[in-house]
Length: 72
Image 1 (tube, one colour):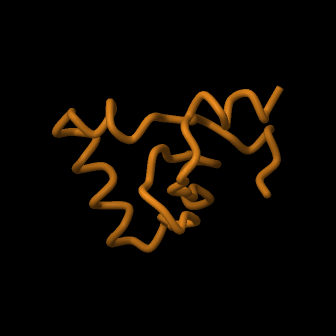
Image 2 (tube, rainbow, N blue to C red; image 1 turned 120 degrees about the vertical axis):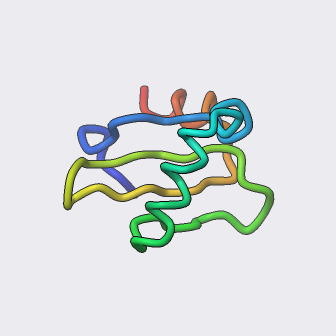
């Protein structure tokens, strides 16, 4: 569980990973150990929480629209 106040962005993995910069961002943060895969199935979205040294990225099997609805 993540507090909604900690969420910086909920992004669709398929549409945002088209960008070279986004793929690079994800690779760099995966190497740093900032990313956590919380899905058992095909990843569909990622959630960026916090910033700077407190940043954490969660990979989820839920769609970004489903996650957005759950924050409301």
